[in-house]
Length: 394
Image: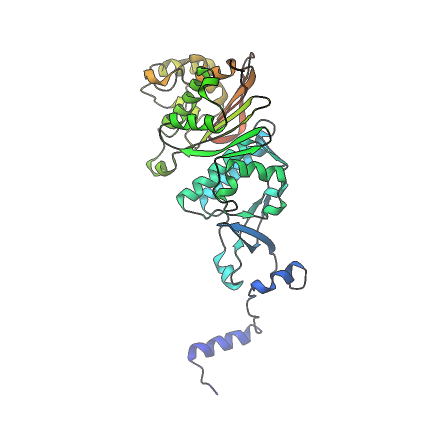
C-alpha cells in the first residue's frame, strides 16, 4: 500500500468529513452534440452558445444575466432605450468585465469558453446606421486598447436585416465573424460605407467617403463639401481638447453613411467619444473671441452662470452656439463652425440635420425652425447625422 504524505492524508480526512465532495464537472467537447439534444446534462445555471471569434466558430457556455437589446435601435425614433443600451455596452466594455472568460470556472469545465454575461442581439428588429456606428466605435475602441478580444454570440439567431446592417458598417469584421472586405456594401440601389476611424487631417477622409459612395465633387455643390469638412474638422480638432493624456490612444472620430442612387438620399454620421459640445462651450476657450459673449448671453437667458457640470440646458447651449455663428476657436481657417453643419440642409432638396451631444439635442429640418431639447439619458461624446436628398446637378 502506498504511503500517503502528511498533506495527502489531511486532504483525505477533510474530504471524508465533508461527505465525499464530487469531482468538478469537466466539459468535454465530444459531449457537445449530446448536450444540444438533451442526452448530456449541462452544468447547473449555464446555457450553450455559439461563439464567433477570430474568424472561427466554437461552442461555449454563458452564465449570468443575458441582456436583451431594444427591438428598435434608433436615436430618432427610440432615443432613451437606445442610448441606455449603448451606454451600458460602453461602460461594461470600458470596465473590462464584458465578454470576459470566467477563468476559475473554465478550468473546471475544460476548454469551453465561459461568458459572465452578454448582450442578446437576436431581440433587435431594426437598427439604423448612426446606432450601428456607435456600437462599432465602442468595439473598435476596446480592440484598439487590447483589453478584450472581440466576439459575437449566437449570430445565427440575429434578424437578417440587422445582420446585414452590422456587416455593412464593419461591426461583424470587428467581432471576428467576417474577414476584412471592401469598404463599401451594395444592396440594390443603396451603397453603405464601412466605418472609418481616423484622428488626423479630415480632408482626404471626406473625399474618400464621398467617392466610395459613388459621388464626385463635380456633381455636388461645394457648400455641401464645406459643411462636411467643417463638421469633421471641429470633431477632429476640438472633441478631445480638454481630456486627459491617457486617452490619447483612442482620440478618434468615426464616420459612416449611405447613398441611395434611386432617391439620391445621403445619410452621413459622424461620432466621437470626446468631451461633448456643451462641455467645450462651458470651458475657458481662450482662443474664441466670443466666449465671453456666449457665457453672458447664456447667463442672461438661464439666470445662472454657465458651468461645465451643469447639463440641464445642453440643448440650449448648442442652439445658442449655432445662433452666434462662431466655432470654439477664432482662427480664420475654421470657417463658420457649427452653423456650417446646419447650412448643408438648406442646399439640398430636403432633409434634416441632428446634433446630439451629452444631454443636448438640436434637430432642424429644411425650411423649418430648429427643435431643441435636453434628454434624460446623456450620450457619450457627440453624434452628428445628416439625412439629405441631394439636388441633381447638370
